[in-house]
Length: 302
Ligand code: AMP
Image 1: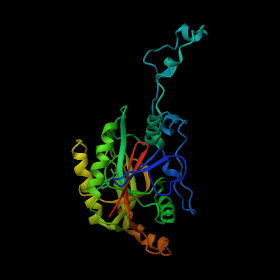
Image 2: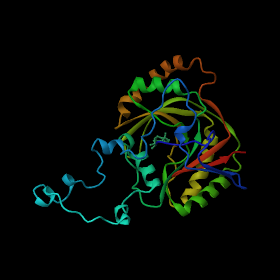
Image 3: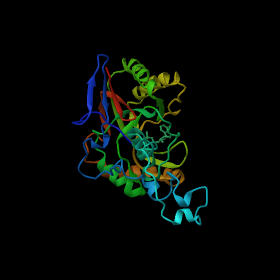
């Protein structure tokens, strides 16, 4: 879930505007996007650090001696220091991860989250979304995660697709197709103000967020246009029925039964939290975006 914004990016990436109206940004960290001041958002661990679940021993990365399928615990070869022959650097680095693999792995395993599909070399986790980080949601996010004992989400988006795995050579045709599909969609106003709870497909994580009550026809149009493009690559469509939303908090496990009955009373309490925010949850949407691995694409609406 974790991920993604384009506007406001400042320095360290390459920006290119092409003739077809698609902007591309490479290797920008969406977490560098402006942060509202009232709460501090959790930042992902540096790429060099082992993922949290691996640190806690939940994820096996490589065989260590004690994890080996061979029981070498009483093998004297391991007890005596051996004189070793230095290995060539090509051998020493052959199992090193590429930067994009590291980025994917740390994103996916962070805080015990599990990947929905296995990572294969040359496959890029990708999704299409609306950036709603300009909404004032920090206060309501802090309140909600406290009420329900959740982790705050790290980015603020409304998904228009599932997260799919794109082979590298599919990225360009997918982006071109989406750009075509979006070209006749007018800018619109989204309103996100209805509390809702979600489960991921594996039912291993619960999300709580704000569902869209305004702009739904336009969101559906955009999402359907994405479905049409992804279908050509045998990739799955968005949820049916869709529930366009911004996730604000999440937790491991299936807490649907516990959280769902609380939503109406929480919504009443939420009124107090948001009373000072003008037009809470309302944003004029001028663009949609795609994140594919470490690349960001920006589609301007009409
Ligand atoms: P997101 O905030 O877009 O990452 O979505 C959070 C979770 O909501 C995802 O893991 C989806 O699997 C889940 N979800 C479950 N049902 C739906 C639905 N009807 N529409 C959209 N997302 C859904």
